Image 1 (cartoon, rainbow, N blue to C red):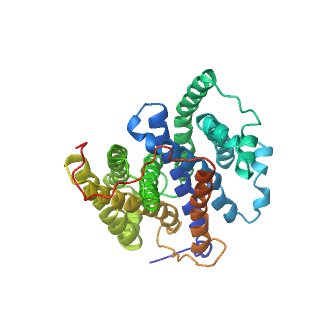
Image 2 (cartoon, helix red, strand yellow):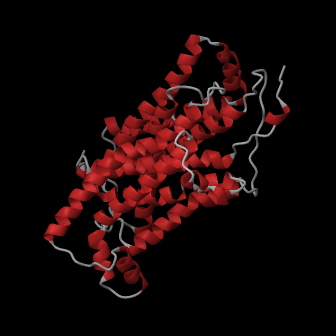
Image 3 (cartoon, rainbow, N blue to C red):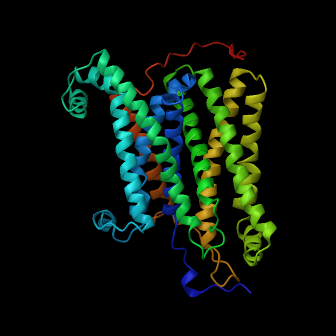
Length: 391
């Protein structure tokens, strides 16, 4: 019997609550790539180090917007900050988000201060903006550059646990809801962290190829190969954890498994089994494994890595959808399922979600016009595809 209570017919957390953890995941993943260069000295990632830091900042600006769109009274959102309640999980997000945003702003200031100074010495609106950012202090020498490097490295190291905490908190929010067996698992926050890193690396690879193609820049072979290997490794961990979560529930054969089994087999079979795992996890795994283990021609390797990054962006989005929406399809009677079909032009519809997701890329374009995010980019030489000299 498919019994659903009347108050469960309409899904409360819709597309905006799917987009919220997705964007915060891009923030955490992009910052991790930046930190691999600034903290751990992975020099091959230098071509995207600035871009990854700027991406983390821009996506961070838009991370709370889906939540605000979901609220009936978004003007009251600051109440959780001005009336502190340290036992509130949502208030915790406000504190973590504010701290992390301040840290990323400071790191950008110290990492790019030299470029801001160079641009501030010119004329026009861009120069005025740079002088304002620098607080009208244009002094620079060897000692200040060394200090900037040390401070930015310290901030990058401090930002790694904060990035994990920011997105791990989102997984904690779902995992702490004991009334929902699809969400209530101790692995939820760990899964969210690793899937965030997957999506963050994927968006950097995808965007780096697109920007290089548009500007006719040479794609840095070592950088792309390295990001492809990191992406492959984090993908293995993320998918393994998701499978282990389901296998552990199935093995224990608790009373919740009967309804969860039906949920997976009936309502989520296509989005969860066929698409998330069967298509958008397995195929990128094969593509990335091929580029990491075999000496492929440069053009073929690039095509496989770019395709895998695009597919993994979709895979993580499917994961967010299956967690957020899939968990709400369960009836509290444990005897049936609700249904959900997203709107298009609604306040929380697909068009609004597309605009929110696209806006950070537009801001990144203007950021790049202000200060170059790819200072070492070189024009590509039009030659026939040949095996990479680094292979």
